[in-house]
Length: 101
Image (cartoon, rainbow, N blue to C red; front, side, top):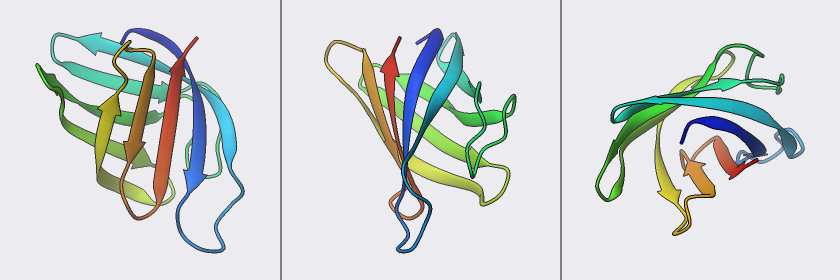
């Protein structure tokens, strides 16, 4: 998962912000990873953690969306078969679609 990823952010709450796009940098160490926002979003600060979690043999064991404005939320994630796209959704506020650069 290491490297830069393009990010599409969708706000799930009615009346929320328009969809946004930007970049995040993911660093994986063993089974844990952290994604840091490389661009500012309405809900995420540039240079701050945006996602973090743990992997297992089936994909994500645990994943969390970290917003400096809306707080942290547990989420579900899915990795595409080729490993080049990740969808992360907390079911309430945010859906992130990350595509490998």
